[in-house]
Image (cartoon, rainbow, N blue to C red):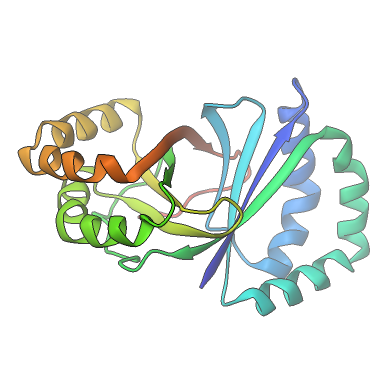
Length: 217
């Protein structure tokens, strides 16, 4: 499986208008061809006027075939002709599952917010990170955070990167869970060993887009 993660930044003040247009004209056509997204979000904390959406495919060929069919649809062409006025920039990256993904979530949660985290590693260090995280970090992090929505490596786009998404009921739930994890001696030991592998870390807090209902984990 591959994941196409697409990040669109809109001109300031246009997020509401774009969501209304896409929700009524774009989303019904896009899901007809691509199926349901893995996630469709607006950025709450991070770069503003930004949407992030993720689409899963069996492989690159399936992605190309589905997108070609969608782009040939007059209804999609009509939507695109109206939507382009809102875009300041568009980018995407192709992700592949980390060696240990998927793993079972805690379950029972309807995500209220999602913490999207992108970590960049020193060149050549990503395989070492995967081994260390699977052996020492994975069990502790999932114990405390509970609901991972995806754990991927960037295949096309930024290199030496991982992208992972964690769901929470709300900000208080996130704070409580992360505080418990940070206080865990096992996590502290893991961090001390993994930190030298990391070049850069960033995150954004996302909320489900108004036209998309996230499934329960």
